[in-house]
Length: 147
Image 1 (cartoon, rainbow, N blue to C red):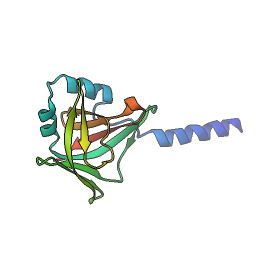
Image 2: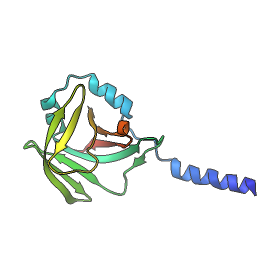
Image 3: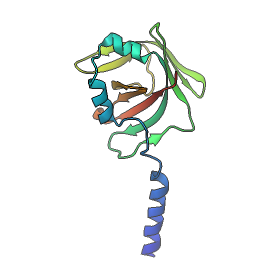
Image 4: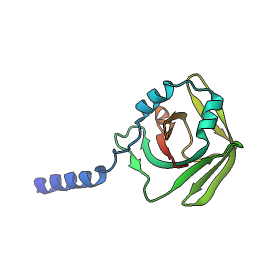
């Protein structure tokens, strides 16, 4: 009986954990290191955000595994006129103005209205955008540039 129970637990663990930690982008530590290797200011961050970014991966504080976002499509579109549109499965869910709040070696996105998945420090690295809130016991949200 114990062997069957242990086998069942092992099978459930394998099924729910096998596809969780294969995100091709940098983990938060590598994203941070990549980000600080460049010289950033408020204008460079603002301009680097312009385009469309699709949410691909979420990893929450205290978790060793994250989750891919595969059956839903959450996209942020940053426009040159300082507006931000968020769509979920092609329907607009947020439309607001935005600006970058600079800090010491960190930047935050401020919006007139709340926008999901955009809290925390901004790290840009190649075609990846990370909104990092795990240091506040929340989640890190990984986006990939699609346009």
